[in-house]
Image (cartoon, rainbow, N blue to C red; front, top):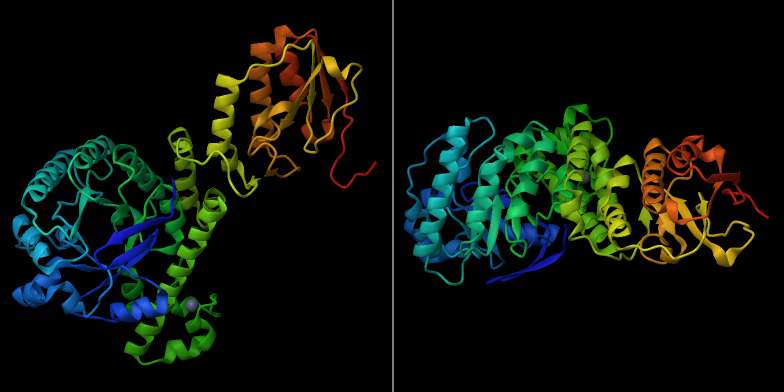
Amino acid sequence: MGRLGKLGTAHGDVTTPTLMPVIDPSDVVFSPDEIRREFGADLVITNAYLILRHFGQEAARRGVHGILNYDGPIMTDSGGYQILRYGEIGVCPEEIISYQDAIAPDIATILDLPTGARVSREHAVETVRVTLERARQAAEIRSNPKVAWCGPVQGGTFLDLVAECATEVGKLDYQLHAIGSPVELLENYRYAEIVDLVMMAKQHLPLDRPTHLFGAGHPMVLALAVAMGCDLFDSAAYVLYARGGRYMTQNKTLHLDALTFLPCECPICTEHSLEEIKNAPPEERVKLLAKHNLHVTFGELRRIRQAIIEGRLWEYVEMRCRAHPRLLDGLRRLVKYREFIERFDPVSKPSAFCYLGPESASRPEVTRYEKRLTERYEPPALPILALMPAFERERPKVDSPEQTQLIRLIPPFGAVPEELEEVYPLGQFQVPQELDVWQIKSVVDSISNYLQKYGERYEQILLFNDPQRWGSALVDACKSVAEKLKVLPFSGMRKGETR
Ligand SMILES: [Zn+2]
């Protein structure tokens, strides 16, 4: 579901997925121009409520581009998050809509009512009701055609409410959507619940509209979020963390005091020593750390974009989610949505399928293959079936080849009839040949199903057994469903063998 996109705005195109650095209008650490020059980030986000508080009607005259002195694309958030954190903010929803129409950001956000993660169901119902009411009202009153509007989804951890909110806001005239309330989940490493939240929203939102995941700006979570179809992220963390002496890496956040080395290739970390950064004057240290944090984040975004181009985003997510057991929980929860994800996965990719762990056995490609083998495949009318558990493409020696149907047994795909071997990814895969239990299970399940369905058709079923690799699992499974099975010695090659 991860995708590269071009988001057109009144101030230029934005490549997605991307991260919007948060600009605090009253305390600018880096100007948007500086961010664009140094990090290649076009789109920045600022807060309409804070602009209103600090600049009032002056911003309505100069526009948000005048206030931030920036001619690139700007998004404004409305202040909903400030409500979640600090309670009521004293601005009514209509006021914040017409104010954003006046200051004219490229993308604006309605004033939603964030659900949060620690609330009663009753309260969550109320936040969804109010958010939808305001979304409908905003769609009526907004007036500036140059501003694209973002309609948020609330509901928090109550997934039925998330589904309802996404369905209803998706029917309204919005150009983008935002998924709210993940911040507390993110702060507590509740990645499995984030996956549920995002996947529930994505299953009910119009998928052609870019999706913003509020607050998910840490590099460790970006790949997972992009794989679920999130296009926009925001980060205030780069500077907030810097103020707390915290140093982001792709896998975690470290405190400067915990570092002995600088585990990073960015210009800040190559041009400065750890001691220089630690001993810099406070303001200078915040800037150095904030720059490093942004470099790490944008570097991660570039790697994610490249992985999408190469057709290997899922593999990248598998690698990244091994940084922390809670992230692995997130990946394992994502696997539960594989049937939905499969609908969006390209049928062919420019790179080989690489098996990198148990979760690879549940990849969309495998799900699709299992489904299509069951629904679409009709075996040829031949009396002999030969089962060959081999990675190399070779035929076993059989007495009457023209009477024999050959099925190779390839984990994690399972039964692969010879005539399908050129279909992606059955002919383009890299899998470990030292098998794990999930690989064995994938083949055992697949061939058991096949033999149950078609075993009666054959006069003879031959299994070229390779006990060194498979133990007794294959023979046991095949025998239990096909009594006529004849076990023959394996005749194929192993890695490193020659003939
Ligand atoms: Zn660095």
